[in-house]
Image (cartoon, rainbow, N blue to C red; front, side, top):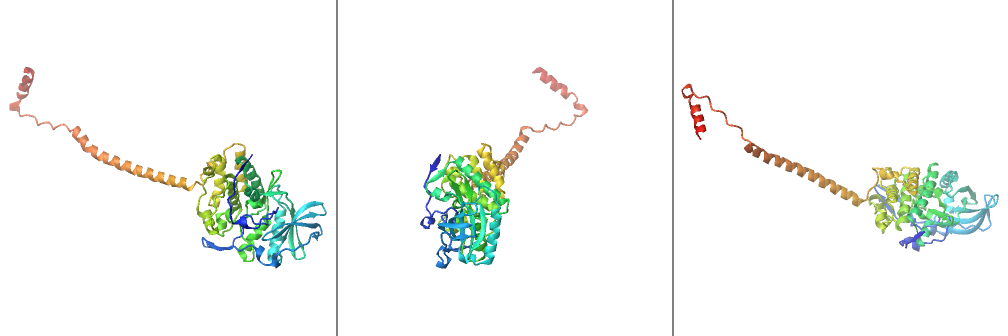
Length: 415
């Protein structure tokens, strides 16, 4: 069962979104052409290189054999980093995707060396939830990756078509994504660009994360030069990414939390009119609890989402394994461990109510103490008046008046 909704339009709706199986198109507002300074850290964002010049376009020929084993097939699409082709690995007679870098990127020895290193690391990831890299190679002046060809549709296209999974279906998808992140984390890899467009869903329901190597390459270029690509996608960037700080796997967990939120509610937690506004929201604004958008979202699911979206990295899940454990507990109808954590982020409204409550209690305590003090002061004279001390007995009478007490006694008896 799926739920339908209309995905909110954004500037990407006017951008080229030719179907691409491996995430080189830019359907998620990745292109940013501004330079921002937040928290004292400069972040360089430059426009996508797709429109730079004709020399940046990858022009390759159908039927060419690359690396002695990969036959180039039809073009699947283009993006800021290069182009993706359908191909075939001749030695194993299997379909592959061939991603070719743009020539101006291939001409940079430092960049291609780093790309090769990252590609080798990604190639060692052994997970059904990560698109596998077969080979890194070079053909003429084009460096390329030969990768697993995934027949399916990325989550961004599915969302824009009106698809919306149920909470149970969303949890299952996030379990698969967490497994992919866990496999990457075991190799020390941080994706840095988790978003629906980099998550492929096959017709059989298998979810795969894409573009690990390129995400790290994009971060390296964006932070060092002004020659081509961005560090991430604004709507899905963690607070530390928005501030230009060093990111670890907890940044990916935050980005996955944004995707989690979007799948549940049909909207992103932060989606400002400008990228600067969006960054400020990621850094300062708490997300509206998902249940306020859709009351059918279980409290346990909301707890996990809000934990992923904590502003401080040390208040999120610290590893994909910890996130995976709570997702599996929800699937098994158990209480997530994050529900008992004192570090669980609370919505701003709840924090405000808590502060007001504490102030009221404090004032009440001070008022009660003052009232008791006043009452105590006022009751003390009354107590003295109500219980006067007995009068001091008179001194004994002289001996000549010793008969007086008998007379008094006689008078009492006569009455």
